[in-house]
Length: 340
Image 1: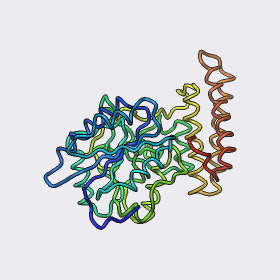
Image 2 (image 1 turned 180 degrees about the vertical axis):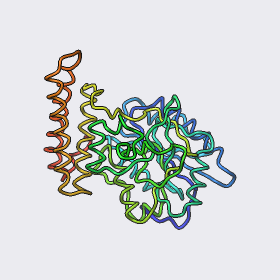
Image 3 (image 1 turned 60 degrees about the vertical axis):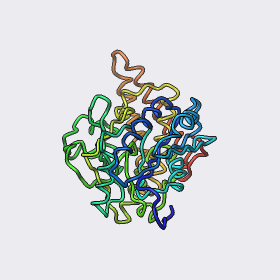
Image 4 (image 1 turned 30 degrees about the horizontal axis):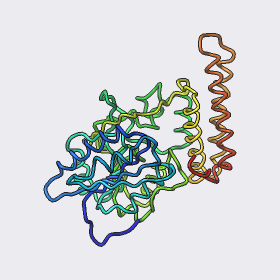
């Protein structure tokens, strides 16, 4: 990440696109309206990185978003680089004083972009700022999270964090015990929306490209926090996130081929993250996951009732996928060739 002698604009907004053409169009239309609401003298640019979409997303951007006061640049990849590496491509070319990451299925509420910039101006030690994420129905989504650890991940895998969200102990992974309307200093914020200080990236570097999908923003926030910057959650910045939070309940998984692939990606990233930041504990998180899957497989095998057989098959598949992820990453030591 470069230090610029001067900043041609205040904000560089980066959007990664992958087969979300119609949502991307809505996102850009909404975003450009929001850019037009910036206070006088404030300017922005938009950088869209298309990860080899097959739905004409890149062509749509080039065709429909060329004549706006806020410039929109499109970068087309011939292969899917993943979330972190695609963001790095745009971040290296960004000219803004602040850098905003926005999902193609995320929509800023009125005034949020200006408020994000004002918050960064007022909080000089904040390296990353996050928003309050809500679904299309206005429901809260986890927006201010705690770092992954053996304890936090066990709470998630066992479902205890889901069943006891108001407990400070069991609700620790997603800070579900905290009031959504209260600002806080946190461990990490989701990549659906975040605003980053350029100086923080200059100090710690960009996203680790070893993470194809999942954990890349956790890893970046951990490095930024270790460098002495704050990770801030600001509830007055509200973003509607259509994609929403993926189900955290193992019993609700539908093991289509595509779902199994996404689960495998998550497991690979889990092992890479633990090996990088927790060393030998990667063996423990693998053992904990597989033990939980084995116990739930056994529980469903010995019980009668509708759907028990299918659930047993799903937990058996989860165990198989973790064994595959362990083998493919050599215990979290190497990232498999991309695209995953």
